[in-house]
Image (tube, rainbow, N blue to C red; front, side, top):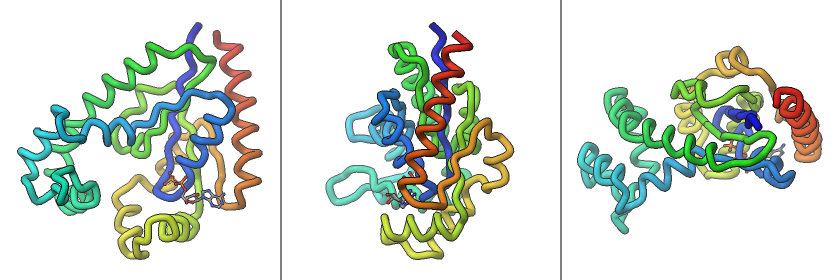
Length: 202
Ligand code: ADP
């Protein structure tokens, strides 16, 4: 049985995590590349020592774990550093995603890839599902969730693909500007769609 691989992407605060959990509630397996990246950066992992060797102790927190906010700031301000970090993490993320895919038995899977377009991970998926929200909605939700200020959030958004770039690559779109109830019915609609696609491409 061929597994339909759906890549879920969207800008910060657009609703990826929320949508992933709504798919999970419907029994759909989720592969989260952010979680994989976090695990790879834990002390004791090969990637951890490589990251520390390149970026130095200044990116560690008091507990000598990688401070993701500091690391993010470093790579934002320095494209070379970003390349280094991607060079360490991306091949390993790919390998782990492939291993997880090989172990799955399901009609379809959601792979959450926040930077799907920026990272060139599109070859790992069969379809791209974009969650799209207005910029002011993204900012409002991210501010409420993280406490970051508007200018910081805008800086993160500026480093990500634009809404237009994402939408250009989208096979499917969930618009998330309304309330949670609306979002839930959008996810249910997509769930029906992917189940029907999976059953006809099998
Ligand atoms: P992402 O994973 O894309 O950064 P999240 O799923 O974490 O986005 O959503 C950002 C914040 O907005 C979270 O606190 C989430 O609970 C909230 N949120 C997401 N969608 C909605 C919605 N339709 N209505 C209200 N709040 C939402």
